[in-house]
Image (cartoon, rainbow, N blue to C red; front, side):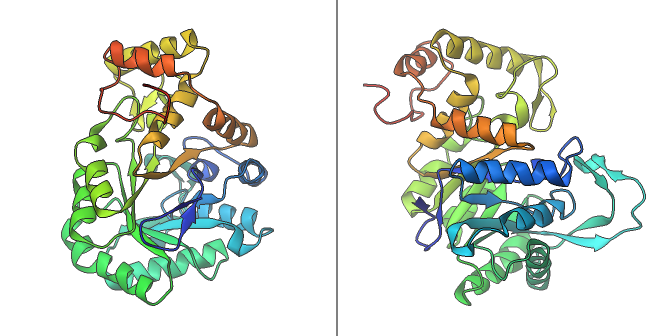
Length: 328
């Protein structure tokens, strides 16, 4: 288990990202979702990340139901604030936001202090819990002023009251996350898609700042939403069709992995986990088979020769850390 910053909250090195069990892209039923969480649990995962945004609250409801059989002290849950859910007429679906669920609610951006507390209260009700361990400000890209002026102080107050154990922000960019690390007292940040085998943007600002400040980093999007899991012309990158040049680069990475008797999935997860500032890597799964595969890939050793060839071929910058002891 790894501690988040200076908090008392601990997470497993591999966590389960619970967007998939809420019907990300395609429908997932209750049984399938429960099986995915159960499989992750069997493989030792004890950190679970969710959000109201995922399936309009369905992720939180399904995750809470799946964890109900386990002692509360045995696992860590994070959720997010910034998108408040309000009832809608239920007509149509939510595929415009990526989730194959009925449009029972609509999202309202709200990083006010009142909005943060109301959103968290609703999340606790959906989860069936009296507390969560970590709360992130979720994607405040276009709401920076409100997030720093009201949202962050509200989280700090919740932490001081003991309502949550650790606080932070979760985003798909590094600049604002670096600002949170440098200008606030966050325990952890969740960086999605900006520290992968295809994108090492976090190496230039976020990860050094986190190391200096003693802030933990959780990595999401280790597969860049699909391209590093199964590279090909129809693969997605950052939730859209992958550009041809990135598909070509991913296929080159996969070929190197195959030459060294490993998989691109194993290498993608190992790379994210290797940086000393990283406390956990979130892997999404929508079924028991996917959860099992993520755990197997995460546990699989990646040969030193693989990392050496990536560096020699220019597919990995020399300053990017690789698993300890894998290179001289």
